[in-house]
Length: 77
Length: 200
Image (cartoon, rainbow over all chains, first blue to last red; front, side, top):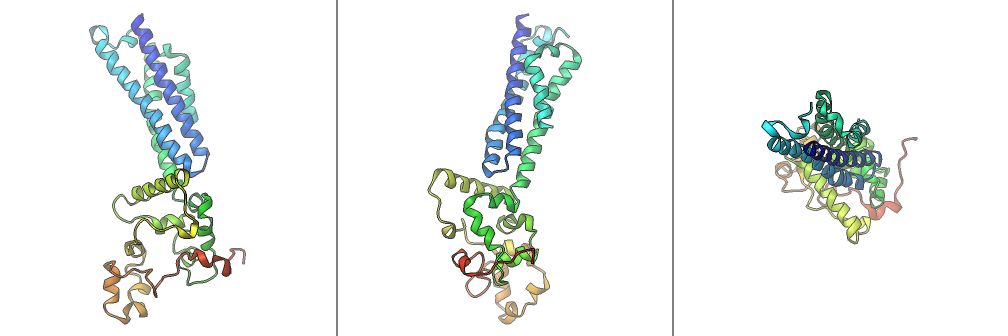
C-alpha cells in the first residue's frame, strides 16, 4: 500500500512538472516576442524535461524496488 | 495539442490511481512521455520558424530603423533592393541575409540572437546606427544565391578586372566593400531619403 502511494506521489509530481511546462510552452507560443523563445526553451523545456525524466526515473525506481521484479505502484493492475 | 496534453497530465495530478488499470498505465506513458516530448519538439520547431520572420526581428524597438531601411526608395540601398524586389523572401528578409550558410548556421544565428537579448535586457544597448556585426560580413551569404547567376558571373564591373571575381568568391574582397555594394541599411541617412510604399 505504501509503495503504491509512493508511486502515485511520483506520478503526481511528474504530471505537475509537465502541466507547468506545457502551460509555459503554450503561453510562450501565444506571446510572439523574442523573450518568449528564451522562456519556452529555458523554463518550458526545463520543466518538461524534468517531468519526463522524473517519470522515467520513477518507473526505473519502481521496477527495482518492487517485489518479484514488478513495478511497485503498478502491481495492483 | 499542448493544452490538451496539459489537461490529460492534470487528470493524472488529481487521479493518479487510474494507473492501476492497464489502460491507465498506457495513458500515463503517453501523457507523461510521448505527448510532452512531441509537444516540446513541435513547440521549439514552431518558435524557431517564427524567429526567422521579418516581423519577429522587427518586433524589437531597436530594430525599427532597420525595418524602415527596407522601404527606402533607392535601388542603391542593398537591403531595400533585395526586400522590395523579392530577391529575398520578404517575410524572412532579415534572416535570409543575416544567417550563416554553413553547418549549424541557423543555430549560430540564434545564439547571436540570444546575445542580442542579453545586451538588450542586461547591458546598455547601443543606438541603432551604432550596431555592428559580430564579424565582418562573409561573401558566402551573398554567394549562396548569387553564385552562378548571370548577373553576377557575367556582370561588366565584376569582370572588368580578371582578379575581381576570384577574389570575391574567395571572400578576399567583400561584396559590401567601399565602392561596390556599400550602401546597405545606411541608417544615418534615413531621414533624408524617400520611402517606397507597396500601395503605390
